[in-house]
Image (cartoon, rainbow, N blue to C red; front, side):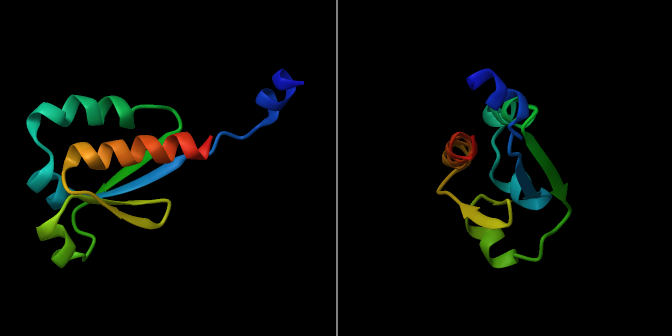
Length: 91
């Protein structure tokens, strides 16, 4: 029965929208490989926008819009942890 459920179950994708300026501001070089690895998973869709018109938030903290929900964190590593937690919850 598990096999059949897995076969027909739709894997829910995480759709992540980034602001290019926010990434430039908050994503350090040492985390870029971790982000790249996470974002290359088949159940992750992401898109970078030049600007998302959230300038006040963009100046203060790393953020992304995940499946329409505005997500922030104190730093980019914690934001990635939030993405990973959301990925687990979506399964």
